[in-house]
Length: 544
Picture 1 (spheres, rainbow, N blue to C red):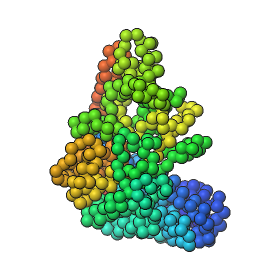
Picture 2: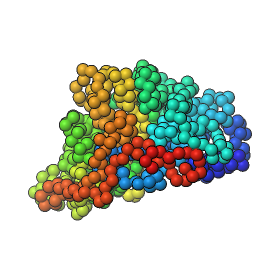
Picture 3: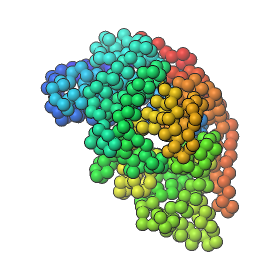
Picture 4: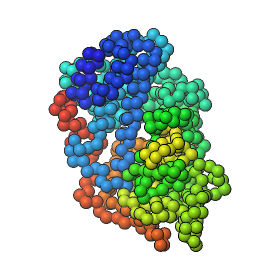
């Protein structure tokens, strides 16, 4: 254990990369005594355990890297209030990205490639290193260039990397991954690969990285290989995304699996849980977890009315719009829809609840009963802060997707979680190649007519509509150079939505956010923490 302990201690002392115990847990359980010896003599199951450790770190990263609440798609109470490098909430993301890079470098350097299993794990390590640097570069601009396991002395001397060299490390790692990893065989072939990265996933992220780096030609080339593999297609109904209907579908290029049969370990399997549900003390999701006998939710960030209006004007009541965002009135109406004969006998059926509510309040309409069901406890608390009359309908936990629940904090979905979808591949390719055909494939699924030619304006609008809530809007606006205008008023006004139990009218109150700061161009490159600056030769990003 000595060599690993020394390396980890050096990492923690400088980059604060990760908790020593978490990485060592899996190593100790496998009986490793020495880093070089462990990796060179690792069995296939031990190599697989190292891959699992990387995927676990990647999952920790995914929860931190979207910054959706910082965009015009959401209402919030001034997310840009951070005034210094230690108050901005990205330190954990930074730490985990370098943790993943460290795990990958250990495997790339030290794991023997004498079996097919180990070769695949090495391919996954190249992917994870490339993916980690994709996120590091777009977040911090010029983070430290670390392509090997460094000594304590090396770590203390690291400084900012060169942007071109960093992108080369990112794309070359993904290229190497694409040469090693198995390819998805064709349509319907994802289950054979499982919730692991593939050749096509590496090519997709390589294309995305090239596009961020400004090399559209290389981006188009990589992305076209994914398209030409003919192994992917869009699912028919956008509303099925993030539900069990989409698990291992041909739209998911990389996904995290929740094992439907592992009920005893569901809290560890889960990818979507009650933290994604609407605020449980005030709002009830139609067709949601309350039908299991338990109800809970902690979602703090709600969609903005401007995003809702953008979607309604763009595509009306399309499946994509209805699979993304609802008005309060539409949410109430959803209780009525789910009371129809088509849903009778399903886990999401609301007919009994609607009938009981109408019996408790003789003379009310179905819609009014739906409104009383929407606002928890028969509208006893019909008010929700940080809400502009709009609710998210994406990453939505339907009762039909749930593991069996035993309490209000035992609410988990069996649905897989996509990290990259084929829609992203198509729209990235459309942007890189100026291709309207790929753009129109995504528009067609949304029920929109085809465009006659490619335009940046339509591509940008399409990405906003397609990837609501998926962590793309913040980064897209920064790389397009439009964040200062699109996010200019984010958090400026605080909203509260209330319902009147007597009239069923919805009121949205608004007050200026006290001490509002708003967007600053310094957010185009995240800050390094004070300890990072003090303990390395890293130079702070502009404005922090």
